[in-house]
Image 1 (tube, rainbow, N blue to C red):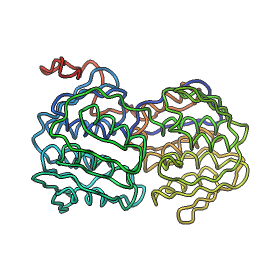
Image 2 (cartoon, rainbow, N blue to C red):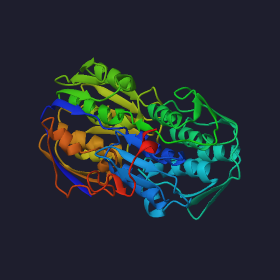
Image 3 (cartoon, rainbow, N blue to C red):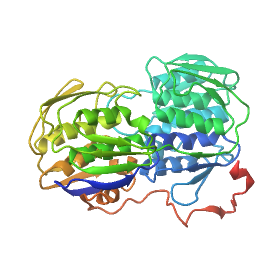
Image 4 (cartoon, rainbow, N blue to C red):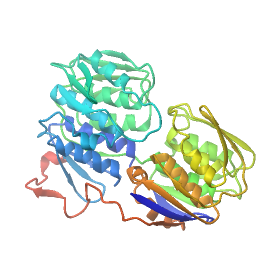
Length: 445
């Protein structure tokens, strides 16, 4: 469990580097199981969700080894069991990507219903609808999703709601199916494109990723490849929002500015001054922000994962702000903790009305999910005095070395609990060449 002490009131200054995208990492790892040879994945964030997914892959028989910080080799050729371990799957929302990967590779999959953050109702009906359309028999019993298919076949699938998870899962299933699969009303998020890019490097036939219609022509075999994960725009957004909220001056490196456009636009509207380069954004926060109105939308709209940190920023903005959450119905549960810090926020349905206060004050707060934890950490940086944040395992699930990165910007943030122990240590203990796996030409396809 992670407990942080934050002393607020310090403007953040300096440069911080964004890690690889969390939401890509937990999808490209299962995707690697589809290859008949080893897959090298670079720029993986060293976070708890990646470690949990690695353990899941290992329990299925995959070989996963580290090759320095942020690089893993995944060889799914040895996967035999198609039953995911409930001890690990229940800790991770993205465990559902094993459904598409295992079904595609083995024609069967048994995966527990996914866990992850409690941010409201998160059904997987669109995933299952698509698998059924491709010829899979779907059964749910005793908390387990079971899929069976003698031969997956291409299908025309219209998603009733735009779902990132369903879009990626159906791409995985379709990659080795017989015929052409068309996914309409597909999600356009950058990590959808990232997974498609990896599959293309493995020999898949996919067109339209990043649009609302994706076509996948199944192939019999996929091969190993090297794939670098895109930067995490939600982590980058968090640091840009934190710098703005504290009146700081921060350069965030290793990002794709286009992915941040809605966040950058709202920060500019709130009074920040921003500059962009090819892979960096500099933000200079105002003495005090102005109120803005925010509404979350699927990409390329304002991202739901940046909503909570933005809500913290707006607690001290001049005027009255509104934040409307259209994606998840439980995304304002952290607001009760903001109230402990002196915020004036009223939530009615999916809209929060935020009345300005001059200053937040330090308090002891508790986070129950990842982005709410980031918002409360940000509130502590804004507050007068000391705050204690009991983040459980939430922050470590999605932010790499968050206290170290913030300390590098001048923040007074200390982890009071023991540092996180990941199931997967990067470093000398695990490297390509261990256990008789010596790398070689197959790795470098």
